[in-house]
Length: 94
Image (cartoon, rainbow, N blue to C red; front, top):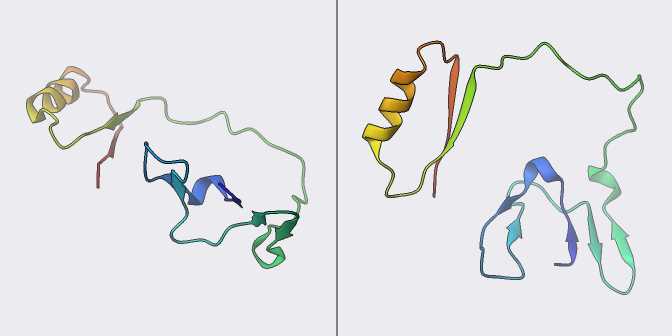
């Protein structure tokens, strides 16, 4: 495609197209053509401090991608099998 999008604001919208990614709630950072047109108004300022890695994070988290035909019994069985689970993140279709 001809757009540079912010990764955390874009998503895949079509798996069968060359224009597969969209950013419906945020404008592109730049548009590519014969040249590069940078959208300066949406660029972030450079970081002011040193880079830090957060290591104290919860590990008992499961991310489940669900399709329209998901099996609710399987989801409930997985949750019941892990009683110490702290979070269940559901990625849903549509």
